[in-house]
Image 1: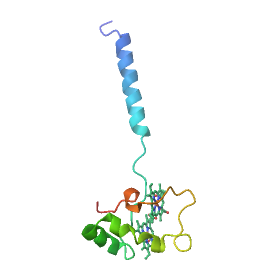
Image 2: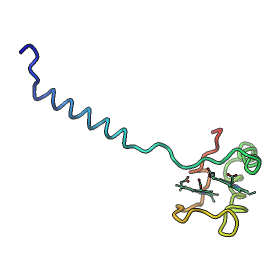
Image 3: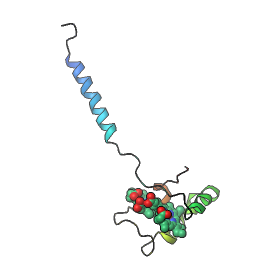
Image 4: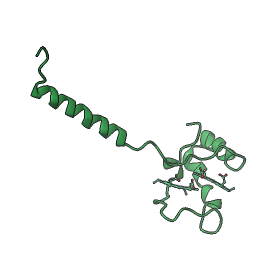
Length: 89
Ligand code: HEC
Ligand code: HEC
């Protein structure tokens, strides 16, 4: 045989498969972005002029238990824009 497969080759192939499997499994960034619509556009402007912390103060005006309710399993929500990126970041 001109090309006997060596144990080392198999190990390398195994390693490559492991790395690929790991990369495939990593989730894509999945948290929904802040829509760029009539409702949210002014917070885009505020975020770029006064910063994200200033813009975030207004999110809870609508996003609360009585108005636009959060999904039940929503994580702690101190910093909205830390997780929900603006579409034009
Ligand atoms: C004036 C009310 C109001 C304010 C203030 C507001 N939102 Fe919203 N938001 C809505 C409404 C209504 C919806 C659902 C309809 C829509 O997508 O516009 C929504 C939807 C969303 C969604 C879900 C988008 C999706 O893909 O389903 C995110 C994320 C969000 N808002 C983030 C924010 C953040 C962050 C802020 C603060 C910077 C904010 N909102 C301020 C009313 C508001
Ligand atoms: C620690 C990260 C984190 C923070 C901080 C956070 N969220 Fe979320 N939010 C999520 C995740 C994860 C989901 C569920 C997956 C999704 O739909 O994006 C979610 C879901 C939502 C949804 C529903 C989206 C949909 O598609 O139905 C809205 C609206 C929302 N968040 C608004 C807010 C607002 C407003 C704040 C600030 C008061 C906030 N979030 C803070 C991570 C976060």
